[in-house]
Image (cartoon, each protein chain N blue to C red):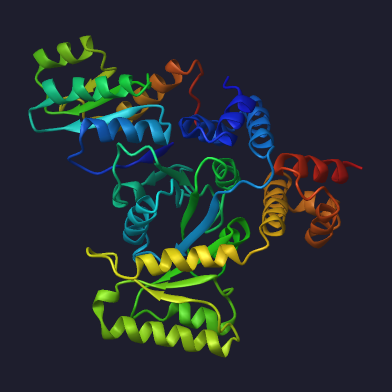
Amino acid sequence: LTDGAELGRRLREGDRSAAPAALNLIENRAPAAREQAAALLEEAAQAGEPDGHLIGVTGPPGAGKSSLLSALLAEWRSRGRTVAVLAVDPSSKRSGGSLLGDRARIDHDPKDDGVLIRSTAAGTLLGGLAAPTREAALALAPAYDVVVVETVGVGQSETDVAELCDTTAVVVQPGSGDTLQFLKAGIMEVPDVLVVTKADLGQIALRARRDLASALRALGSRDTPVVAVSSLPPPEGVDELADALEAHRAGLDLPAARARARRLAALAQFAAEHGERGLRALGGRRAAEQALGEEDPAAAVPALVAALERRAMS
Amino acid sequence: MDVVYEGIRLTPSRIAATAVQEGVHVVGLSILSGSHRELIPSVLEELRAAGSDVPVVVGGIIPQADERALLEAGIARVYTPKDFEITRIMADIVDLVAERNGVTATAA
């Protein structure tokens, strides 16, 4: 079996060639592989908070996420950033399998080793993030300047992505009111950056941008940037979007945000493995979150899961 | 089983890069153009050069004489229009992956 600690060390040192094997180990559900994956994550997190910017990109099907990512990849590469994209597609409830087609729609140079695109199945969680996706993002963060988690979502399913990522961008296409309605109704949390795609449509796109900006003002989120982009060549607004994403991250208390992300990831993993019964043994979700708050803020996810398991047993 | 679909008309180097990045257990190629004698060995070459030893299976319009040559070149399976039992092909691929990874295939 692969040596998890060794892969973790290579990622920590920025060796991107370790990424595919690391992701395979993380996705492997065999008990021996789980142990190695835990060693990998511990090792990758050794040197403190990794520098990689974790960015969630989410939005309804057809909003233009893949085209946007193609344009963003080119923009980031021109700025000298290395980029990993975790493209999450749904799994079939019936077979448990999945057909992952996102990669085919994201334009990139296959010979460029500064770009990694990895398709991942959502598992049986509807709209949520499977534990391996969270682990994958955390494992890649030391080795890539930008780690994108791309998911399909409208409404509440984005919260998993927002928990994991430093910056979350919700992608909206003009002429569709879902996001606006969800925002106004308070069903959806306000994202860090809103992106209106298909700006080449002109008036309709401008109106969508205006409507979203006014909905945000009504919610008191005046500072949330709303960026209009056109991903068709020549791309428009993509540099502005890249700047907005960076500006958001620059304003974050990164260690606190990452510590929170790890705690929530640990909780999600504990809940996936032990279910509601496990959560009840901890005194409920809120009590579990409090218990995690008492742990070392720098602790890696597997250590936090182990702490919850010890607590549930006692 | 998760299937990563990459689309059509891809270069051998793109196929190899994708297989490595996605960490796949098997590569399936579909080819109907008649250029299988040139393209398929070059996919295999690119894969091995990229450090991947995953099995490659091929499906398409492939004459029997070429089938032998492809198998000798290291292709794990060749499926032609004579192989129309799709579930048998799927089971065959599952068995191939299981065998290469030293495990036994069981239904989920």
